Length: 141
Image 1 (cartoon, rainbow, N blue to C red):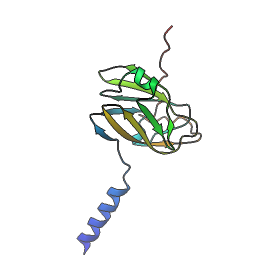
Image 2: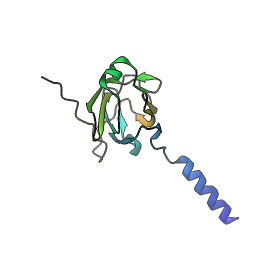
Image 3: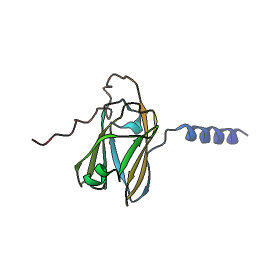
Image 4: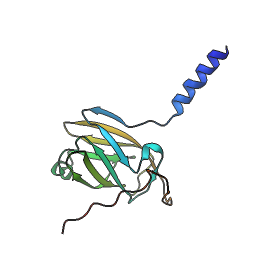
């Protein structure tokens, strides 16, 4: 009986652990900055950076073929591929009105990803490793 109780408690604990990044197809996400999977919160206007194997082309993002949607289905703002490979890097801003839930990423012909995000209305920047916001992309002069 004790063994069954322990197994039940372990199963319950496993179900309450936050989900990691889920991907389909050939899309691979190596990192997210800030590290939202580790519990870092973001707010509207914050820059986020994804590193992975491919995010398509800038033209596909500009045409809306590829997209990143924050709950409740709000498109990420100013998506920009700042590095095409080794690893590919995509930057975008959290849109106003975004809510906590799953950030859904679609890369045409590559795959999709679901990334858990915690969106706070107003949070002071935490001095926690992995929670630092990325610097905005440099504008060409």
